[in-house]
Length: 200
Image (cartoon, rainbow, N blue to C red):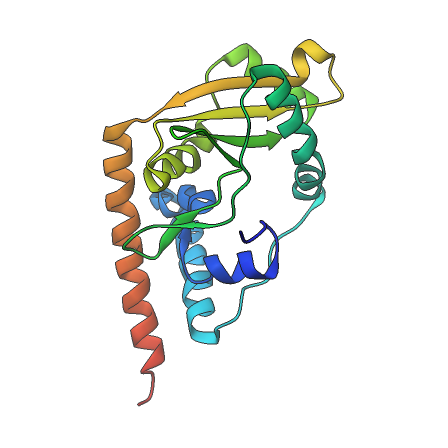
């Protein structure tokens, strides 16, 4: 298994559209976001090198807290989480890195959040729309039936520190997502070929 965050994991996902950025693929109303993500993928293909990863205090906190969130989830639900690396799509340059797989049908996506975000999520119910493309993308690529969206904020009291919401497959959404990812990758292929052959 390629441990998430390892050199092997970065290389496995290099040049591919990944579920964590499927929201960028769908950001047609914000063309710059979509274009910048495409440029990143194409640049990785041209250079054969992993683009510099973005890190800030929020992503660092998430990395540090994820093992504790996973333990809290397992304790609360009784589900055993199998850690996995990068899961490539069977036929196109896409993939996902689930935070865990559960049994033969499930998985989980873990978010470590600030307390006020946790409270907002709990009060709203469901799971934040900003994570829909990633979670449904994981369901699409892994072929799983459900993913538990886990929001974790350890500074809150125990009854509020872990929020779990079961997300089922949305086949209509997945079909539309697959189409958009394929269009995106086709455009990335065209950009790559044009640049690869530039001046030849």
